[in-house]
Picture (cartoon, rainbow, N blue to C red):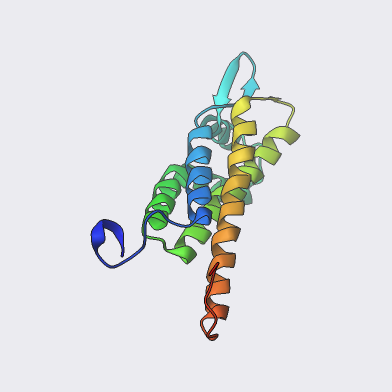
Length: 157
């Protein structure tokens, strides 16, 4: 049975979905924590992207993609909705976007001369968690497709 006794996804979702949701939600929260110190001020990830864009510290080609970071909270909400409805492909794409974007920005911050804040380290942990969850979800989905053609039951008997 599905949610509320109706047909549809079972609840609670498999572990990979839950790991993904925790990782993505954690990354969204970590994005608001202090990521770096510039001068006397601690800056979160959004302030860092804004400063980098205004000071033209990155190539013009990367300014557009760096602005996609502001979509991270929306991507996190959409991922959690996809987890609730157990949509593996949507969950995987969104959570890989969040996890890999977070890890890429963390690498840029760590490589910079700025002092690294705990928000960047939190985003590293949660970004890895969301990527691992996404890979688990997709591996489970691919395993289900492979097993559909067999007569053997899936899982413990």
